Length: 167
Image (cartoon, rainbow, N blue to C red):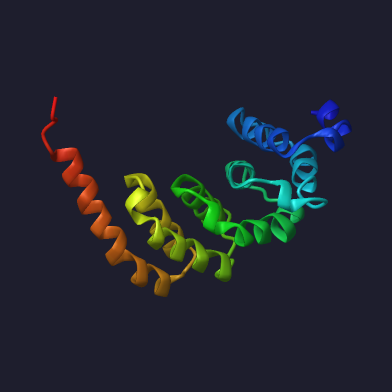
C-alpha cells in the first residue's frame, strides 16, 4: 500500500479504479491509500470513465468510507456523465450512496430518471437495487415515479425466465 501511495501520481484512471476495487475485494481498509486513489480524480475528473467511477464508489461503500475528494469531485463527475452509465453502474453508484447514507438529491434524481430511460436493459438485481437505494435515502417521490416502469420491466424479465427455451 505504501508503494502505491508513493507512486499514485503515475496511476491512470483505470489503475485507480482497479486499486480501489482490489482493496475492497481483499477487505483492505487502508484509508490513506483510498484517499490517494480518490485524490487522483481531482486533477482530471473528465478522464475517469463511468466504470472507473463506479468501481471507486462501490469500493468506498464496501470499506464504509468515502474520502472528501470522491464526495466533492467524483460524485459531481458521476452526475455530469450519468447518461453514459449502464444498469450496473447506476445500481452500484445508487447502492454506494445508500450504503454510506450520502444524500445527494440531484444525483439520485438523475439516477432514477436514467433508470427509467434504460429500464428495458436492467437486470433483476438492478431493478430492485435502485428503488431500494432511493428508499433508503428517503427519496420517496422518485420511487413513486419510477416504480411503475421498473415493475413493468420486472414482469417482462420474469416472463422471459419462465418462457420455455427454444432449443
